[in-house]
Image 1 (cartoon, rainbow, N blue to C red):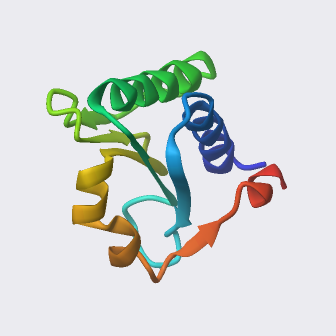
Image 2: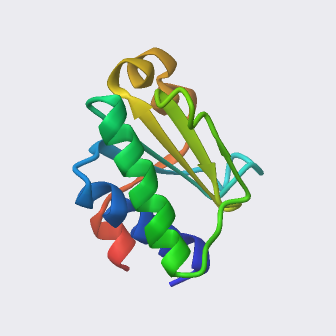
Image 3: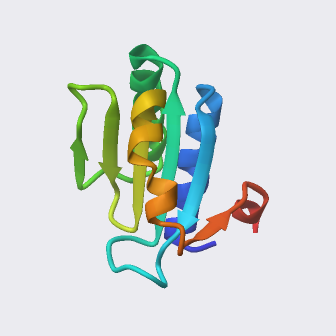
Length: 118
């Protein structure tokens, strides 16, 4: 398993553990130089959004991955965690609907949880 896919799997599990809603993984490496994968999830309130971000940060940190940049922490409505090849977006439910990253990146390939096991 390559390094970016391992990060995606760990982040996915961390989001799932804290009951992140509608976790989506979009492979964008063939359509963008920004990253290989986007992970998109949302929480039901600002406390859960914080918990999701902390879970991803702690899980990836324990495995030797540190973010290059984290943006949006103060607002707790859209937090972007940039790990280089993997970018994690954690939204409030309302902001996720508003920004609709899935539509913007629809040319990317959706990756299922099962595909992360390969």
